[in-house]
Length: 253
Image (tube, rainbow, N blue to C red; front, side, top):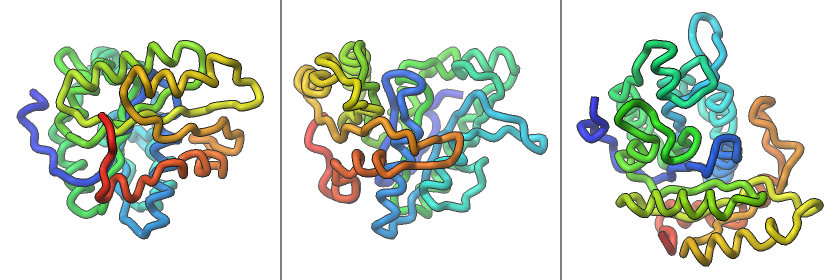
C-alpha cells in the first residue's frame, strides 16, 4: 500500500513531531489539546502508530492514547485514537518484521477522516523523529505530508538540540509540509547552562522559524500517570494556539 493512494480529509490542526523519541511529544500534544478545550472546541487527538503497547483484554493499548484522550476530554475509543499498535518498543519497521503484521494504512486514513469529519480541530502526534521508518518504503514524514497539517517540532533543551532541531527542520522543509515552529520541552531553569539558555535563539535564527513555546520541566506532569501539570500548561500558553490554528496561521515555515 502506497500512502499517496490514500485520501486524508482537510481540516484544521497540527502534526506534532519531534527531534527524537522521549522529547515530550505526547505531553505537548496533550497540553495543546487541553488548552484548545478551554475554547469549547471538539478536539480530536490522533496517534496513528504506537509501539511498546501493553496487552489488555486481548488487544494492545498505548499509554499515549490514554493520556491524549484524557487531555482532550474525549470518549473516542483508543482504537480510533491509535489504530496501529505494536507490542515491541522499537521503530515500526522493526515491529512489522518481528510481529509479522503490516501497518494498515487504510485503517489509519479511515480513523483520521472520521475524527476530521466530526471534530473542530485534530492534533496528530507522530512516533519518534520525522525520518523514523514506518516500513520498507515510508517514513513518518511521508505520513505527515499526506495528512498535510502544519508541523510542530518538539525539541529537548539540552546540549545537542541545535543539531537535532535544525536537521529536523531541514527534513520538513524539503517537502511541501508547512512548518509551524518549534516547542522546547523540559527546560529546567535551575540547571540550565549557557548551551541550554542560548539554544532557542540559535534554533530560531538558523532554522528561520519561530520558537512557539519553551515549556519548563514539570514534575507534576506524567503521561503514564495521566497527569498534566500547571507548569506545562503555563509554558504552552506562550503561544496563542487557538488563533493560530483556527484562522491566523503561523508566521514562518
